[in-house]
Image 1 (spheres, one colour):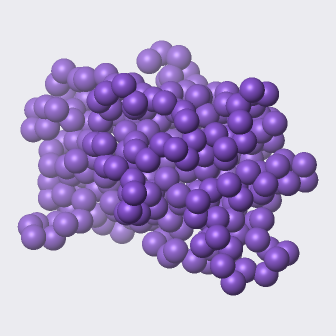
Image 2 (image 1 turned 180 degrees about the horizontal axis):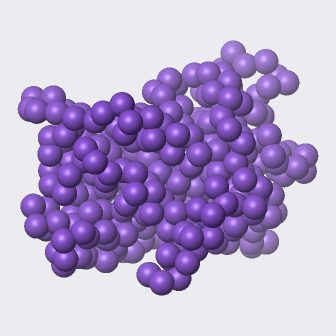
Length: 306
């Protein structure tokens, strides 16, 4: 934790677990930023790999030939969530269990692997005992897939699978509630990344995790995501150059501590009513995290995709 907090200080000086991360629009914004910062050779390599994805045809349907590579790359960032509702993919639970949870076999794998989308770094404010996150998780899979796309012995079909997962998981790593579970006397087993914190009274279904997922928008339009990404404040180049994923997750953990669980959100399950100040800070935080994720994703792919 000391290493984590040191990393947080450096970066801040620079500027049922649903596991959805940002909604489609937010994930596509991350990918749109990354695309603009890929070098030409990496763009070509990524474009070739994405053609191996089973949904590639749907991604580029009615798209002019000259824009297909960009559109496919942006849309690919949503695939890891899309398979949660596609036929032929098995919901194997929100927490890892079994021998197949960490395998990397490409598109032959029809498990949804929802537990790859998050790492519940424990947070407590009242001394409640915490539970460390199980493996595999968001961090272990980012590291596995990064090694694989850089390996000369990994086949293209597996690299394609790993690339679409990385496009998604780097975005997830920058969503504060994908790096945190808060433990308290009223939620002694953790709040599952804010999924157990209500923002209104029953039967309303709004909860804290979904609120943060939705902050960048809920559109499924690639063009809207590209336009929205272009309007984001630019991220710090120094912060973007940090390649250590433990730092990325530490930043998200600290953002959750400072901004997600800030008043009027209290220590328990709620419900809480968010005020305008909270909403403004949340929006600004989400925009900064997505802008940074886009640059870091580009740096990761430029450096590793072979």
